[in-house]
Each structure stands twice: as C-alpha cells, then as structure tokens.
Length: 288
Image (tube, rainbow, N blue to C red; front, side, top):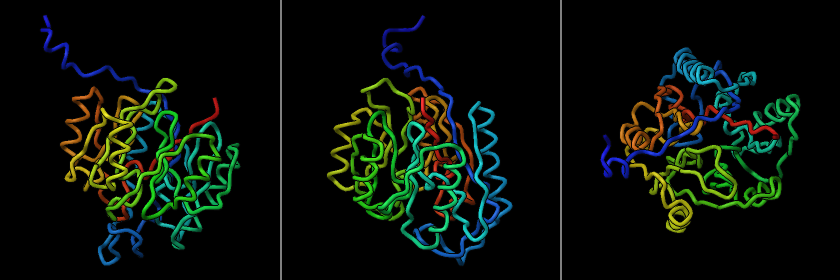
C-alpha cells in the first residue's frame, strides 16, 4: 500500500496527443558556411550519417502514431532540414519565414509554396522572422524570441497575424540563438486559459526575460547549462513522450520525475549545423 508521502510525491499523469509535423530529409546536409556558433566549415560532415539519424526521428514519430509530412529538399540549401524555421502554424494559418541570412533566404519561397499547396492560409511576412525557431505556442500565448535572428517587429506582426498575446523574450547567449534551443513546451494541448509546463535554460535569457518566465511559469523545469549545451531543450513533446538528446542526462531525469516519458534520439551530426530534434520538426496545427 502506498504511503501518504508517496502519494504527495507521485508524478502527475500525462497524456500523449496526436501531432502533425513537417520534416525535410537532409539529402544535401553539409556545413559550408557559418551563421551560428555551432557551424565550423573546416570540420567534416557525413551526409549519409545525418540522413540515417534523421530517419530514426522520422520513424519514431510514425511509430508513436503522429502524422508526418515531407517537403522536398532543395540542392544548395543544407539547412532546409531544420523545418522548424520554415514557418509558424496555428489553426490552419501559416506565417512564412523571412530569414536573416542570405544563405537561407531561398528556403522561404519553397515553404510558402508547400503551405499553399497543402491548403493552409499562407501569410507572407514583412518582418525578419525564423518561424517556430523563435515562436513557440504555450497555451494561448505566443512566446517570441529575439536577440540573434527574429526581430522585435516580427513579434508585433505575429501577434496581429494570429490575434494572440505575444511575450517577448531576449536571448543573450549566442549558442542559443533561437528560442527553441532554450525553451521546450512540454504540453502542446492544455485547457483554455491554462499555461503548459515548459522547460528552459535560465542562462540563455536576460534578467527581465527570466523574471517573466518565473512569473508566468512558476512550475517550469529549469535545465542545467550542461544539458542545454547538448541541445537538450531542442526537443519535441506530444504531452507524454518527449524526444530528447541522449546526452541530456539531467533533463531526462527531470522529465521522468514530472511524469513524462523521455525517449532519446541522437542527432549529433545535425548538431554540427546548429540544429537538433525540434529544429527538424515543424508543428502543423490544423484548423479545428
């Protein structure tokens, strides 16, 4: 028989929700330029290994019962595998990216064409933004990152496009240049008006942003720099299963303690381009 103490410390029950994702096979993956601190063109990359690692992530999503769409990779755009940067989708409306660096700007028309062909209400941006790399839906609120890629004006624009409150968070550590490298939303579905559980790396943000996160998400999982540095937070969650880096050992334990089911997938080759599990996964939130 369980003791009262055990009942108090028992992890909450979590529910897996069916998800819909967009991915891109890394057939042209390499690192031949540097637009973030992880990219070292002098270091060799193995495209076949990148494809094999990516395939394990794709297969896992399918095994978990999620729907995965594919966009065709374009030669000359090795970062297209990071589909999270390809847009931000809520209720069947797709806000297209406008990449900061010229090396990625040719991806945007391809993503816009894919969204239109798939029947999404497709919105072309005026402001520099990098899609779900910097925009995360947390309950009813859009968390929006700035400091390295997306600009503050895009935060105003994304709020107007979706008619939702936008919370600006300032990133200050260049290793964590997109919001999805420093925050993971662990509950993609929550009752209206409620906040989901999130995990984040405190050191990736300025003091004001940390205060906002502490106030809005008092029960958040605070992840160590050690786990953040292996892109532990660049993860994907269906509300129960959380796909994370196998090197984020502390975060793995934190997730288990909170009732989640962490599953590890090694994307070490794609980390050479500055991307991980979430970077390779764009959530398609279809209209109800």
